[in-house]
Length: 111
Image (cartoon, rainbow, N blue to C red):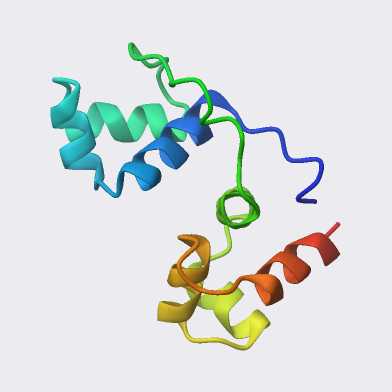
């Protein structure tokens, strides 16, 4: 699943925001839009009026894992239990702040 993942513009906005370590409200304020509008952009409900910077599409495995989870509708708790870690540890793995081999293996095994 991970190797075939091609991110949408909405997903790239999510990755970009996560890389900036901002919540939706702060990212929206940075571009002069409401948090509600930014959320719609991240969900693909509206076309964004900002362009994703070059390089954001070059995803790390941990970012692909986060996108895979979002695409399947699985919660962080669901995946944490499946991988055998706490939800907090999964959040760290999806942020690239903790070793993510178990998470990467889990998503590579999903068809």
